[in-house]
Image (tube, rainbow, N blue to C red; front, side, top):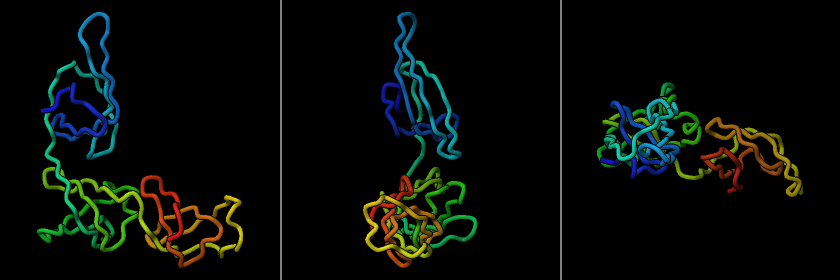
Length: 185
């Protein structure tokens, strides 16, 4: 059971049957009275951020979280369907839970899916993905130094700002954390 002395960014704890992730924390030792810890907690199920204060040494329960390697199969209109590579069991992550991460998924892609009490609630994507440009204005030759960009739509429907020399049909590497263009592949 983790206590306030074990707090670190990214630690997952359970409060009132709800899993939370620690976003920020600060140990405070006032001159008078007992020490306490100020925290910012993100609700893993809803994404809401909560500010809480706890006495030093208070104990918490670890949530029943499991991370499994799964393969993305398809988008069914309401969510994203994944298949566990060991049991061939299929699970779905709703569009609300996936958020913008769903815009980086390609059929057959391997991702880590986070499960809470057997239910899929989130996914961890690789740092970057290679996507094919399906729509953009024609490229300009020789304009590689100016730093100008233009919008391009990739095969998943995501719009990315790319340099002017990128053409329709090119494959580009996109950062999944920020949604920015990295390089041409």
